[in-house]
Image (cartoon, rainbow, N blue to C red; front, side):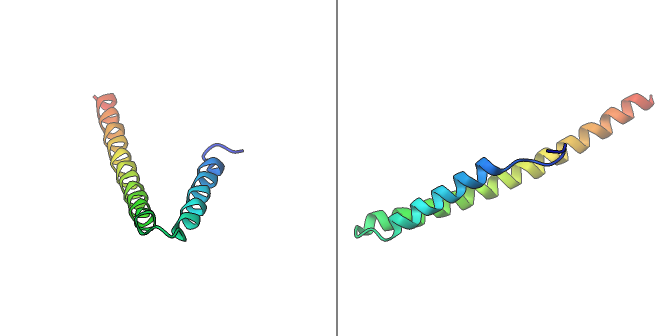
Length: 75
C-alpha cells in the first residue's frame, strides 16, 4: 500500500453488513420494526453528513494553521 491511499476495507465491510441486516429486518411483519429501519437509515445518513462536515472543517483549520505557521516563520 502506498502513502496517501486509505484502506477502507473494514469500513466498506461494516457498511455492507449493516445495510444487509437492515434489508433483512425491513421485511419483518412488525410495523414498528420496519419503521425503525427507516429511522436507522436516516440516522446513518445524517451521521455521514456530519462526518463530511467535520472533515471539511478540519481541513480548513489545517489550512489556517499552516498559513499561520508560514507567517510566523517569515518574521
